[in-house]
Image (tube, rainbow, N blue to C red):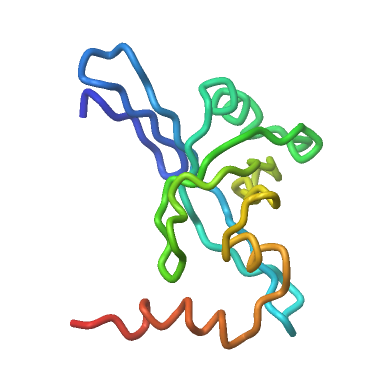
Length: 138
């Protein structure tokens, strides 16, 4: 309890000596699915620098936060169905007080997640994502 401060959408972890801190925010990782009009998103954790973390905290209730500039982050989750997603670079994009920010993986990274995020995935691919959730071994 001493080393971590967390809420539903943010977390700060201190080292044992309280000399270093890591900052994380929960964001939406949006995808387009062919044939669907609205985006499909996963909630994931992203590690950000202290200044990005505080920028987002300061903007949390600001109705104009979507006009603010994005800031760098790195994916802090290993995503099912993807090779080595932990640590992928990208940008956190503020949105609005009623929606958590979005995260877009850097297009220059060669990774299947980049391909899926920037091109509409097939409905069959989306079903592959859901199978471990709905058909998990007991």
